[in-house]
Image (cartoon, rainbow, N blue to C red; front, side):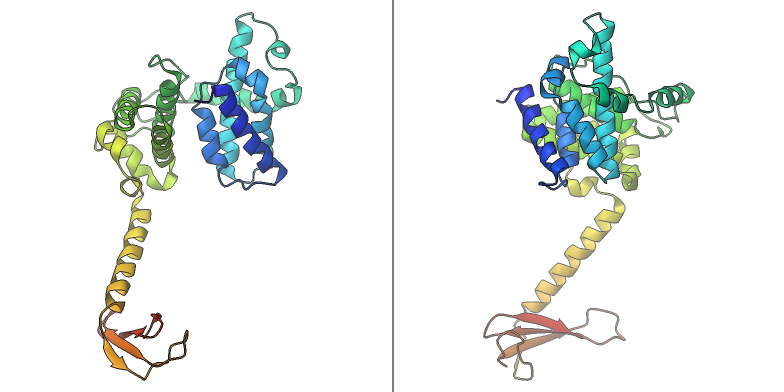
Length: 301
């Protein structure tokens, strides 16, 4: 199994290609999430200089979600470096060389962020600031995943009747760990999928249902992408699926042989056709045509 440092280097090389324009940024968000789930320490940050790479990616990307995710990740690492410095283990130059330019970006908006955190209400209906990373288990990977789930649960205002978000995050992760029998690729992918859906602005109902217990942690951990999808997305999927099934069923019927239709693919007139009322009764019927020569299918009203 690749070490944490090797994995960071591998991801960093992909980011460099994206920054140089030789690789698409489509997978940037997924790679940032993967990076976030790794047990990165000060030593890894120093050796890989991943902080500078992610900062360059943040500047280069035009995707708001990628930029925001990169910025949050950089802030986490900055906190890690500051904690190291506070323990008297040397200056920031000793911990991470060549970070003068990165440090200015890392500290961006730190003052306003601190003030905003102090102004947030502690009432149940208010959204608390992201919880500081803490040790839930003696496993850095699982701790990181629990923290990601917790941050997603607390990403917006908490509804009335909310259960303890920390307890929910622990239970969700535990079930995911049991289902996938470890912290392999499927486990990490499942965690990222749930974090994404909890943060989806168009799917606020899912997060609220998990927080209030309508959807239990055990159920949430095994939900499919279709089950987690927003009502809008689910409705679209059902519509497309229904349409595809109906058209397939209608078009494969034996039909009536006819030479009235000329196939646009092979030019022959050896066809069968079926007419079905697919819309309202006062509208024309839909004709499905099948070419018995080449298998081409088409329809018209």
